[in-house]
Length: 429
Image (cartoon, rainbow, N blue to C red):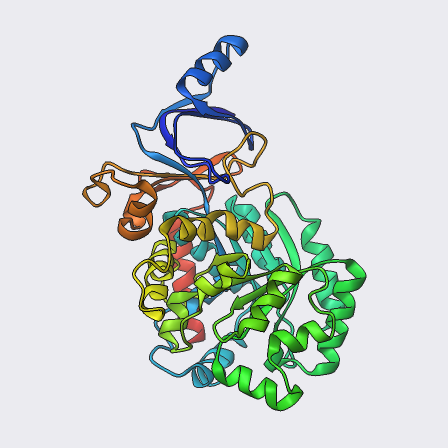
């Protein structure tokens, strides 16, 4: 399939690259051309291209798709079920008991429901940690959606052997799905298991991912156990020798951040979830200043409750201003980088980070012909401060348009996904 996008404003998100007014061409699953109008004319003249489809962007913006770098997709079944509770009560009394009732087939369907929501928010890939990652991987391939997974073992379930087996199993399933090593958190996993996981990461020479420094209580209890913070403890056992990622990273001191920068550990901030659960406000400015790669995630539907990257971007831009009492504390361009390229870096999606020749065609179109996007003083700031899901005109993954003009173009019956999801929820809750 060859698709020509023309009359476009293109934000490639490449370093030092500004807005391009021109054209972008897709062939099968790859971008084969990005350039201004003059370069496009030269390209077309040399190759005499014919197109399966030509899309007039009408001055709208093309961006790399947003990367939801931390979520639990099948938690859609707990949306608005366990709200207005402190984290420990929310998790242990409300979430864990309900999750124990989920079957693999239920997770397969509930993950599809999340993917539909991702598409409406311009999200082209998610980084998921949940109970049955292979079931979700099947759902992703059936929907044409890109998903990265990591293991979530802890003292309540899972093994190191299963973590390794799942890593190899999912990475062999297909182009749209991949897997990283992971476990739930330091506070849910005994030292012996943590040391075994570090050994696994070092044997496979792979990064490791986990919930990290999410709450003050988590950090205080780690000091009681090991005399150091979760970041320092995990580094002391060699967990991050090949990099990795921490989901949340709210309660980190300067040394923690320096370790993350040195080891190549990304921090995935989840501002909506952290506010809703009163976990705190991550110091994104300090993380960036230390050279840490920062990405954004929604977390799951039970703690957010929307899977909406625009809400995350807005909060990621304004909360640092309040934290530092400085209106200049966070630039919108940095936040847009977190939502796109930073997320791809955190997830290991090196072919999906920018709009450039040879990269995967994971592309979104932002509708600028809406009142909230006018006037065009600064497009990056419009997207971060003013835009909403209403502005997502198109979501393309792997060269295939899955959402366009508020219509789903997936190979699934969307109403049937809704029906099955509600049926599952009624049987569980």
